[in-house]
Amino acid sequence: MSGPDVRGASIAALAEGVRSRRWKSRDLVEAYLDRIARLDKAVGSYLLVDAPGARGHADKVDAAVAAGQDVGPLGGVPIALKDIFVTRGIETTCGSKILRGFIPPYEGTPSGRLAAAGAVNLGKLNMDEFAMGSSNENSSRGPVRNPWALDRVPGGSSGGSAAAVAASLCAGSLGTDTGGSIRQPAALCGVAGMKPTYGRVSRYGVIAFASSLDHPGPFGRTVEDVAALMEVIAGHDPLDSTSIPAPVGRYREAVGAGIAGLRVGVPDEYFQAGMDPEIEASVRQALEVLAKAGAQISRVSLPHTQYAVATYYLVCTAEAASNLARYDGVRFGHRTPQAASLDELYSRTRGEGFGSEPKRRIILGTFVLRAGYYDAYYGKALLVRRKIADDFSAAFSACDVLVTPTSPVPAFRLGERMADPLQMYLADIYTVAPALAGVPAMSQCCGFTKAGLPIGLQIIGPPLGEEAVFRAAGAYQNATDWHTRLPDDLPMTAPR
Image 1 (spheres, rainbow, N blue to C red):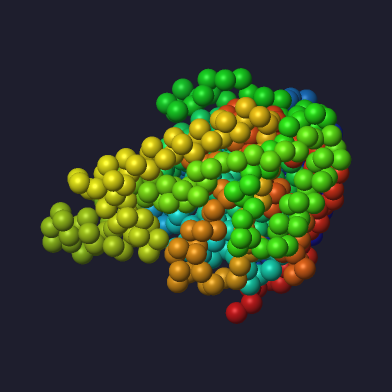
Image 2: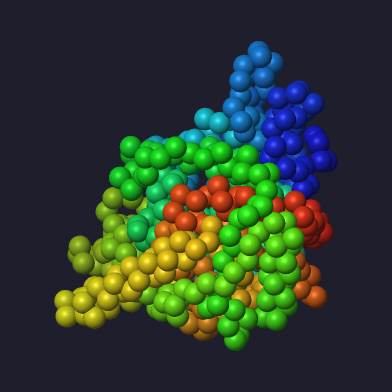
C-alpha cells in the first residue's frame, strides 16, 4: 500500500500529521484511493471517485504546508460526500437515473465549508434514491453492503457514507438525515453520526427530499471526528432561509468535558416489545456506564411517540411530491427521447427516471395533499408533529439529554424487507421523532451482537444542544472501547 496506513485513522491524527509534515496530504489520498480500488467493489459505497480532483487539492495543501501557511482545521484530510450534496463540476445524481449526467454549476455550502477548511473530497457516495430508504437498496446504481457482514444492509439512506467510514475508505463523510438517515446507518455500521438541530447546518446545495425535515450532518469513526466536522460545517448561512443565526459551539471541547451532574432521561416509549433483546441489553449497559461517569439517570415520557412514524410518512411524502415535481425532463437531468407531446414528455421522463420508492412516495404525497384530503391527512400530521415537539420540550425541562436505542434491530439481510415497505419504514421507529422535532441527535456504537453486528446508542439533545450531546457521547466513548473495533478488511468482490 502506498502512503501511511489509514485503516482506522482519526481525522485529528491525519490533520496533525499533515501539519507536522510526518506525511503529505497526497500520501493520504493515495492510501485511500488504493483502499477504494481494492475493497469498494465489495462494499459499493462510492458512485464516483474523483481521483484527479483529490490529487490536485492535496497537492495544493502540501504546497501551502511547505510555504508555512495555515491549511485549516481539516487540512489535507480525505473525506467523501453523499451524492445529495451539490458539487461544482462533479456529477451529482442523488442515486437516481433522472439526474444521471447532471453536473452542477455551483458548490453547496456544506461541501464548500469543508473544502475551505482544507478537507480533500475523494468523491460521491452511494445512497437510497433521493434519500428515500432505510437500507441503501433503492439506489439506481445498486445496493451498498455492510462492511461488518457483506450479506447485510448498511442502513439508509446515507448507507454509502456510513459504510465508507466503517471500511476506512475515507476519514469522514457527510450525509443527510430526514427521518434517521444518518443515525440508523451509523448504528448499523458501528460508526458515529450526528443529525444536528434543524437549521444548524445549511441546506444550501443539498438536493431536497422533504424540506422541513432534511438535516445535513457528519459521520466519523469517533465522536471527536464528528465534532471536528461539525465545527466546520455548522453556522449561519444567508443563502439558506432556515439557517439559524447562532454561534457555533465548541464541540471538540465538549467531547472531553465530562458529565458529572448531567441529567440523562430514558424515555419509556423507546423500550417496548419488538426490540431485539441484545440491543436492549447493550443500551441498558450503556446507561450504567453513563451513571458511573457521573450522570443522573431518570425515566421520562414522550407520549406521542406512537404517532411518530405515521406522522413522518405523511409529512415527508407530501413534501417529497412537491420537491420532486421539478424533475420533468425540461430543465436538467434525464429527458426521454420518445415523446409526442408535453404530457408524454413529463410522464415518460418521470416513469423512466424515478425508481419504485420515489414513485411510491410521490403517489402517497400527492394523495394526502389532494383537495378534500389535505386537512384529514397532511394538516392533521402537522398538528401531531407539534405535539411530538412539545413532548421533547417537556422532557428537556427535566433533563439535559435523552438516551435511547438508535435502531430496534441490527443490520438485516439484503432483500429481507424490500417486499414489505411497512416493515422497512418501521426500521425508523426510534429516529423519526427527533427529526420531526428538529432536535440534535447522535448515534455511536455501544456494543455488538453475538453475530458480530454493531449496536447503536442514540443521544438526543434540546434545540441547539449539540454540546450536551457531545458531552454525553464523549463520556461514553472515553469509558468504552467499542469505537476502536474495525471490520476485517474485505474480499475484493462481493459474495453472490
